[in-house]
Amino acid sequence: MASDRNDNGLAFFLTGLALGAIAGILLAPESGRETRGRILSEARHLRVKATEEFEEGLEHLRTDLPEARKRYSEAVREGWKTFLAVLEKDHESPPASES
Image (cartoon, rainbow, N blue to C red; front, top):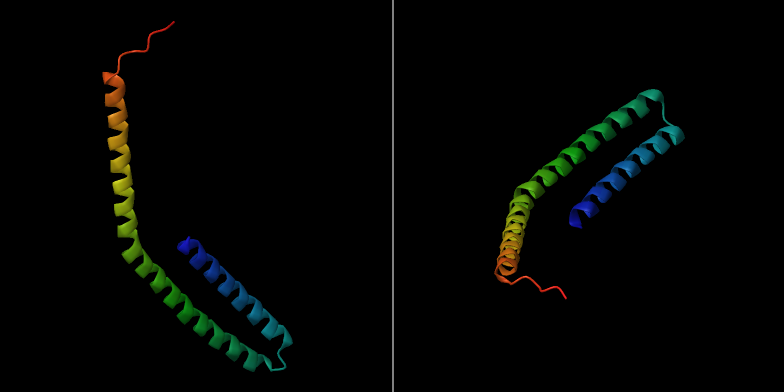
């Protein structure tokens, strides 16, 4: 499903980002001040990226949720009609004679 793909993509992105940041800190030949500055810069970048992902998720809900709700309502309505038709058919049918 598309939502699962988006959720997995975001999880992989965030995992990769965290692992990259950790590796960068451990392997960095920079001073503490430079490293802290870089961490702050990356944190700001992550915040921007997370905000963008959040906004995309909200837009997805705004556009896709009403359509999904409409399809669900139609399916329930059709199921209910079928159920009532089966009940009506069973009610009209004479009972099967036992041998």
